[in-house]
Image (tube, rainbow, N blue to C red; front, side, top):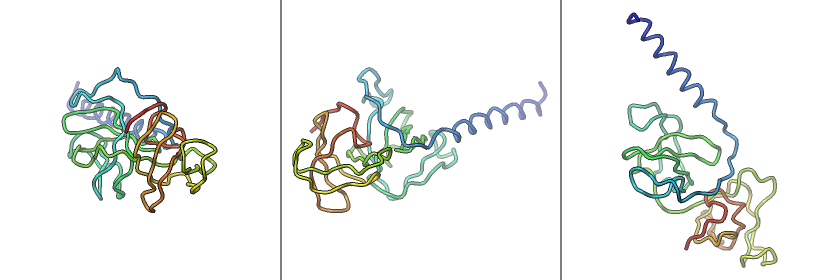
Length: 184
């Protein structure tokens, strides 16, 4: 194969790879149940798992290095991300719209946050107690960001990040906690 044909073949493969990544859906994605079977090759922590953005300016790249192009720049600390793979000091992450890319570990935090499910057509109810009959504190619109304080597997105790409101939201109304996941 001549030099120019190899270059053309390589560029075609790169184009196909980047095109398929760009065509990946940007529709809101419901979380799937995490399995304890997969462990990160770098940390040994479960894959997938949720984390949040720590930095005020976090670049999502198309590959696990600064030599790769920036795909997105996130400007909101606390946004939840789902880690789906690990490579060195880089984590492949997915946001609540389904966009995937790579972020350096320095940009991420283990602090648990969530957004009210972007796939909802109605508001989520923030209640005083973890039950459907609990006193209604507020209605939270889709994509409102909350801090996760604990989850029982069906309800999560949350704090609304932009206000002082605290209460319980049904776990299936949040992107940032897996169905049935429990933690304190």
